[in-house]
Image (cartoon, rainbow, N blue to C red; front, side, top):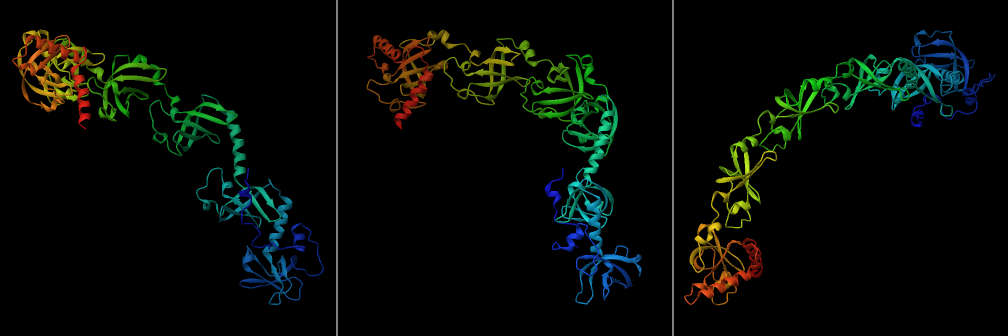
Length: 583
């Protein structure tokens, strides 16, 4: 349907020749009421005869006392004009400044042509015209001497890249609008083409059948497919129906103008839509995948696409399998498939699973070799000792490389028999070589638990042979808290000097009496094997301190520390409180 914008261009056909102020007799002429008058009147058509032909004009006798002059430019066939020819002219004025009647041949023709077109042709009529010249928004058409406007959108069915290609050519046009007041005409070529195409399309749709092969040409290519011209009907060849294999864009297979043969997949007569297929012309390779590629078999293929989560491998034309990142290595944590394989690379993989209906094949790269975790479990049974290097640290443990990029973890709870280790960096650092014991291996979960303390005998199992109540021991201050100081003794065992056991006099702050790394002597006043605690006393070194005093001091310290409370945790809590007091 023609829009209002298209019907009202600012280029009326007669504007150059017919003044909008014409009234009276002019209106009669436009309406066809041109009755002969015996006397001359302006704005009328009069009959005349050419009496003289000059190089650039002719003189015409209209029966007036003087001839009128018409320039050669008003005649299309100037070379054919001869003296004696009879012509109609438009009388613009009785006498001009040259005392001659002002006449126009072209205006008379224009008025006669307008009368003919408007009387013989109406809106919707078909008329032949010549593409004359371009104007803003379209092309001016010559309709038997009357200029009409052809909007750019009405030139052809599709977008027109260059209007100049149409200039000088003659076509049939459909009259869309005739405006008598403005004396302009709007025409369309597109509507005639669409009507013709609609007839051809209806005929073609009746001929087509699903499964039929038809030839066509590629008309347009988009991201999702290609439109194929089947000789009047456009069909859509979707990208998923182009190949059994993977293509990322239709232009990998097709180009505009290419002649191809396609299969009719579906016909929607109501919407006049046709779905086409190219891959359906060949055998579906997925029909045979289960027979050709048994689960557990090894296949070869080329990597055709890489995504962050895995790599697609083309096993044969139209059949691809996915190697997920989790199936690329037994020992390394692969986060990007591109770190292991690259596009175009030939790989061997093991078939893990086949989903024929979903057209999916799961492949494994690591399955080509035996699971090293199972091999390791056989090589190092629980209780075996290994030697390795610390490769990584976390807040809860240290990872030690055993062999072949396989790491075992030493949890902080398995680092010391005698100390509460809050962070592995208290004992180890990256790069350290250590001995450890295999505590557990889980090949399925790919986890190995290691123990550092298990390489030594637990000194607490036979603590009575190392320390006795009342014995004087030596050690170094390793930690100071609000409630006491921790002293490192032999066998890597820590003892606690409670603040109440530092001096006979009242001690406000431990730091007032003891400093880190101080070498001190103290007496053992309490051994609690269950709680793994040794209580020490500096003031008990006094010779006046009896066995009863030592026992009483031990009970006092035990009462200050609740059973089950870990000394390491207590040291952190009281240490923090002590720091706040100092601030």
